[in-house]
Length: 217
Ligand code: DX5
Ligand code: ZN
Image (cartoon, rainbow, N blue to C red; front, side, top):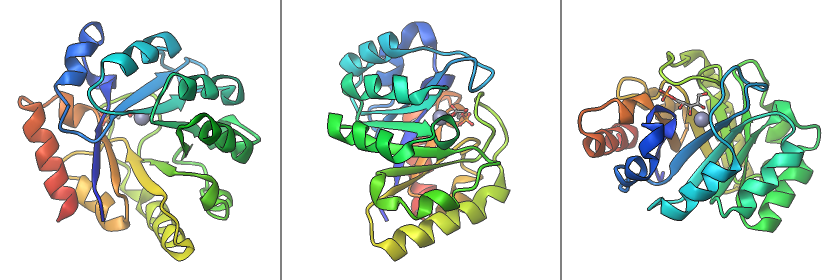
C-alpha cells in the first residue's frame, strides 16, 4: 500500500507560511484546514490565503473544508488549483453532485465524516469520490488525542474500497503521531494527516520520515 504523509499547517506559524510549507517538501501534500467558526468553533483562513499558498507550496494542496455551505464555497478551492478538496458530509445534502463538480473542475473530490457520523451511506457511492476522510478527533483544533475507537470505521471503509476495487484514498486526520499511526495503518488507512506531530517536532523532515516508516511497517 502506498503511504502518504500530509502535514497540517494548522500547527505551523501562520505569519511565515511560505517558509513553513518549504520545510515539508519531502511530504506528499500540504493539508490545509479551512475553518469558518460556524461548522467548527474555530477560524483559520479562506480562498485568498489558499490561493497564495497554491502559488508558493512545493507540493500539492490537500484542502480540508471545515465550513458550512460547501455547495457554495468548495468549487472555488478547486478553481484555485488545489490538488484535492475534501468537504464534510454533514455540510451538504448533495455530496455526489458536489463531488462531480469538483472533479469536473479538475480536483480530487474528498468526503469527510466527523466521529459521530456514519460512513455507511457513502460506502455505496465510492466511485464518486477520490478520498474518504475519517476524522479521528472532533474537527476544529490541532493537538487533540487520537480516537482509537474510530478504527472500526476505518476498517469498514478499507473493506468497502477493496471490495469495490476502486482507487479511493483513505485518510485519517487528528492525533496522528508515532504512537498512533501504526494502528491507523493497520486498520487500513493509507493517507495520514499530522499537524502537531510534524510542526511540533525539532526536526520536521525527520518527523515525516519516521511517520512514513511507522505507517509502512
Ligand atoms: C483538526 C484538523 C486537523 C489538525 C490535526 O480539526 O482537521 O487537520 O490539524 O492536528 P493534529 O495532528 O495535531 O491532531
Ligand atoms: Zn484537517
